[in-house]
Length: 221
Length: 206
Image (cartoon, rainbow over all chains, first blue to last red; front, side, top):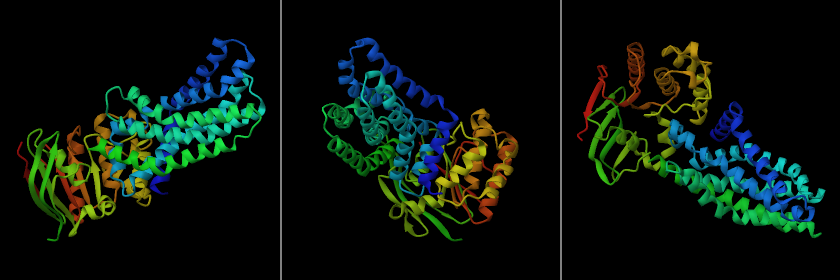
């Protein structure tokens, strides 16, 4: 087993041993999303119009909720030193940790979102678009959040700092993700939006592991 | 004796102040270098600089005649690390921690080697216990077993005797002697004496 696969398997196993951590994130997503229909009222047109934005924002906040522990736990227990000393690129280790984060956070959020979209009166096509855009867009959130988590490692109030750093960087993904679903409502296709989301994910994939690794090396000094 | 590790003119700064300045030493096969000195004298910094976790301001570290900065991954394959923290995951069992450490070092998984390392520190009955349920001394023994289970020839040990009882300290010295007898090397920063005949002491000034 390569170091990359071993690290990803380790992080997934740790989540399996403490499922409460993921359950809290998903519960936050559900509660935050359901509050909007309750607060705004049963106006179907209004709910359908804001659904994509609300669900995407809630997914973003939920993903951020679990990111502050992404590297902090390894930093505190000393396993970050073992990653820094592993005889394979740290960039791959950063990618493995973000991939594991996406599997336990982004993927469940993408699966869960269409079910919550029903509460907003979204049509079947919009629900499918919502799930698809989240599936393509959430890897970017994990990578951007990973960078923010690495940069704020060891800082006081790192959770708030992490959000301040990551949220602005996630704006393009949020805009194209939410507008893709709105495009469906107007009878148009969302292929362009999906392509842009995929491009953002690929750019993140091609650049951010290096930035995360550099931040981790700095934190390890 | 064949010199494997050669450090020349090593200088390091921490928090803007010089901690190590022009430090030079060499280490041959089968040798143990014990780093001593008061708190803040740079023992941990030296270990971290050797592991390339801390950048050196000046100087070179050569392993088998080649600058380690030229091939960092090969250098990291050659060394095993024990830091202040144990580097263990509390939610994994003792054995799982050692297995994953082997995989992260890109070494072939060797169950026998792990069992031997656990046995040497009297950890076999605890192999299936979650690390979070262990005492500080037991966790330190698991971290040491992780070093022993690796195939690294150079061990970098930061306060290896911390939290160990007399029996575990004796076990560590026996294992360390065995490692040196097989041609391995070790550098240990410690405040407690390490009584091994082949040990040399490097006292760092504050």
